[in-house]
Amino acid sequence: ETRKDWWKNSVIYQIYPRSFMDSNGDGIGDLNGIRQKLDYLKLLGVDVLWLSPVYASPNADNGYDISDYRAIMEDFGTMEDFDAFLAEAHEKGLKIVMDLVVNHTSDEHAWFLEARSSKENPYRDYYIWKDGDTEPNNWGSVFSGSAWEKDEATNQWYLHLFATKQPDLNWENEKVRQEVYSMMTWWLDKGVDGFRMDVINLISKDQRFLDAPTYGGLYGNSMIYTANGPRVHEFLKEMNRNVLSKYDIVTVGEAPGVTVEEAKKYTSADENELNMVFQFEMMSIDQGEYGKWTPIPFDLRKMKQNFKKWQEGLADQGWNSLYWNNHDQPRIVSRFGNASEEWRKKSAKMLGLCLHMHQGTPYIYQGEEIGMTNVRFDSIEDYKDVEILNAYKELVKDSKRLSEDTFMEGGYRMSRDNARTPMQWNDQKNGGFSSGQPWIGVNPNYRTINAEEALADPDSVFYFYQKLIDLRHKLPILTNGVYKQYLEEDENVYVFSREGENESLVVLCNFSRSPQHVVLPDELVGNAQLLLSNEEEKELQKEMDLTPYEGIVYQIK
Ligand code: TEU
Ligand code: CA
Image (cartoon, rainbow, N blue to C red; front, side, top):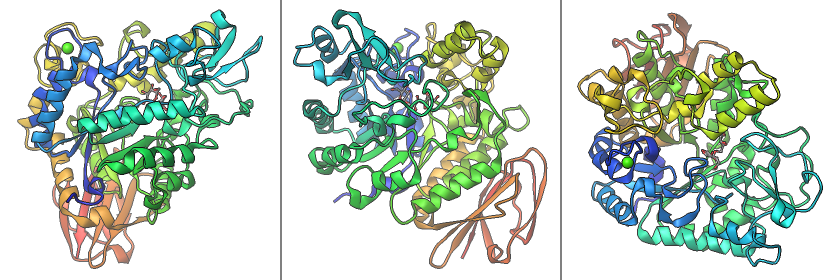
């Protein structure tokens, strides 16, 4: 008998295999490397490992461009390596979630090679083709330029919301859906424990292919026009009926442009679609005119409003995912904390405590648990990610909309490569990631920021995260407590509670570098026991003086 909804008090750890651990010295992380680190992950206390794609891929978008869904990428090993990895993870009580990328395939997938060969090919309608002398509409690709690519051979355009090497699948085609469901079944029958579904809310396109109100493209609004399309819930209910409902698994949909109202449909148990979604509103509170390339200082009140909206919005129906980081986002301690020598550890702990005290399933991204920071590469040549390379070409080289300096400042702060520098294991060569030449530069601060140092330091971010995960496992109020926010106008301090039948949690987080004095409402003050804090223990009182980046959670019974 399996625990119903076990994923509601699980903690999920995301691994970006390319950058996690290289076992064979080719400078690229691999499955056998992950196996070597299962005991480290067990020690941290996480329950589930989500692997970014490990399927065959030409790596135009580092595996998010799949050329064979039933084969393992050569860089990462063999199917035997995968099976051994899965078996060992299960032996250690770790569940494995795969990354399902079915909004698009690689242009090197057999289906697309067939489809592009002729208009009459039976696979032609697996993808989205349009006639026309010019682009069929004004949609822009997230990775710059138009979302349409002219295929000269058959004189038609095909749609790609992402790179030109990532043609969108045509979900209107019943055959495509059946192919996807059978592939998912194949992986679930191997014993995997669920899926993270890449941009799953983009799969249903309005078949009129109308122009978007404003040009799409890389300024962050390029996916809105296909988000939450006309048949997306129909498709997900069909997927649930055909596949998901047959297994005891966890599913999370990555949903750029999803609103709370839509999220209720995707994640309410009685809708029979998914367990939870990743929302992106929180990830845009520091984005300016040209999206992530022109970052602006974040306003804590906007962050607090977003937490409140989603916590209250999904309280009675649906379920939140809780994340600060992933392979597309910069490192949280550099983004919303303070990565200086003086404040890095303390602000990383405060951020961890803040996130993990909310209602939902917490996600930890590799390196977050040791307070890894953004990297500062000297020039655009050091960057590898198709997103920044294309954006640089469009914004700096071609259109000259942004100066090199302005763009590079945005890149330093927001590039996805910030999350993709190799995991820092120790202070040896390449941070212990590889004995070879890593595929991307290692952050030079690996000498002081690494897992070995963290494991030797009782006061490290690692052991603080270990305690947060332990609380998630032990305290039902963390899973079920009702969220309530206080001092909503305070620009520096975030105060919220989680209310239970006969107990409550009170959370205080100082997001600023200066001490803050707060006066708490009477209802929050009671005889409290301190559960966890990143500072010297102090009593919960009506008036509190919080030190810089202080995070505390009290339990009141
Ligand atoms: O990300 C989709 C997505 O929204 C990202 O493009 C992200 O919002 C953007 O990079 C932020 O600037 C998924 C995957 O997580 C991403 O790695 C892939 O590149 C993308 O889909 C295409 O598969
Ligand atoms: Ca390797």
